[in-house]
Structure formats: C-alpha cells, structure tokens
Image (cartoon, rainbow over all chains, first blue to last red; front, side, top):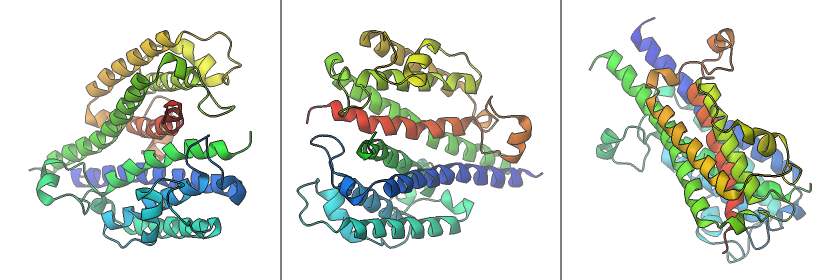
Length: 167
Length: 167
C-alpha cells in the first residue's frame, strides 16, 4: 500500500467517523419527534424555559444554516429570525407544528443528500466563512469541522427536549 | 513536502479537530460548575428529573470510563455504580458535592494530560474494547472515535444542567 493510499484511507475513515456521528444524532432527534405529540411540543421543556416548538424550529434553522457553509442555498431561511434571532414567546406568530415537522424533514433529507455527495477530500477544504489566509494557518477549520461543531449543539437540545416525554 | 508529511499533517488536523472540541466542552462544563452553588446542584434540573449532583457524578464517571479504553486505569471507579448503574434518588448515600467537584477536576486534569501525550498516529489505532478482527473491518472504531462519541454526551447533559442557573 502506498503512502498516498494510506492518506486517502485515513481521510475516509475520519470523514465516516464524523458523518456517522452526525447522522446518528439526527436519527435520535427524529425518533424523539415521532414520539412527541403536537400538544407535547407546545409545552415548555422545563418551567420558564423554551417550548418544544421553539427547539424544533431552532434545530431546523441551525441545520439549514449548514448549507451556505458548504456552498449551497438555505432551504428554510424564514426560520432563522423567529427561531434563532428571537427568543421563544417573543417571536410572534409561529408556523404550525405540522409545517415545522415538514421543514425539518426537508432540511434533514436534502442535507444528507448533499453531504453524501461531497468527496472525502473536499471535506478538508475550507468552509465559506473563513479566509484562505486564515485557513492556511488553521487547517482544522474545514467543512467537516462545521458538522463536528453542530453535533454537540443537537445533543445539547436533545437532552432538554426529552423532558417533554412522560416518564 | 513529501506524501508522508502530508499524511502526518492530515492526522494532526483530524486529532486537533476532535480534541479541541472535547476540550471546549469540558471548559464549558467547568464554567457552568463554577457558576452553580452546592445548593443549586442539589436541585432537580426539571421537575422529577435528575439532580445537578447526579449529573456532576455521572459526567465524572463517564469521563473516567475513557481511561480504560485508552489503556489506563480509572481514577474514580467508585462513582460508576451510584452515578451510572443506578438512577438518581435510588443510589443511597452520595459523596459530598465538594468531594465530587474535586473528583471531576482530578479526572479532567489527568485525562487531558494523558490525551496530550498520545501521538496523532496512535489515535487511529483500535481502542481496547474492540477485537483486532473487528477493527480490520471497522477502522473508524479507533481511540479518537471514543472521544468523539463522548462529546455529544457531555453536551446532552450540559443543556439540562444549565436549567439550574437562575434566569
């Protein structure tokens, strides 16, 4: 095996590690969503904290915000203002939960398709919001790192959302 | 630059991505702990859910359980039974919070030292709980993946623990 093959193999192994972790988080979120009724999603996850509907919109908007970093257009840009910029209960008329569930499924599905089409090598290129100069000094700020940094964000809110389940 | 150098550089980039993410989570947990009083940690994070003290012991025990996977001895094995095997409120007499804070600091500090001493190449070798045969087929089940999989776990509980902070 040549050294070049080893490099390619390592890249593939590492890309698989991160993308599998991301996919498993999204599956966990999907499963939780399927277990929660619209009525449960209208409740606060803990007294005085965000409602389920807000976290559903928030996670959808944040997953959607990965598209531009990889060089694609957002699918649900209208969700960013009410579910990221503004706090819950101060964000006016929100879409129906059925609509948010659909937006989530759309974003998740298309994102998975786009991600699967990116070759291992390209994951290690710079994402769109870092300059070529900075990237030279900090090569870990690549496209794959965008996904890696979002894994934790999904988990952070999953831990809260599961409080909506009855024990 | 030779291809071998490129391989080494790529490996260093991979390990830095994961280890930096891990370190930043632990710092986030540390910061939150410093902001929470012992009294706050004795409260449930949400009605009928785990208390802060349980999650502190739980996160310490789970970080401690990384040592054997990397080939080292656990530092606080006594925490596994009450904070992982048993649920909160059914786990008998717990250590004082001051003691748990010390255990956390010890585990976190020594783990960081051990991790920093592992060369990039070794992170891509198999962890101790997978057979050489399985590892041949699934090379992503390496030491670095152990750390990667724990990042999300910390975040999951951080999202819950921050409910203990007064708004």
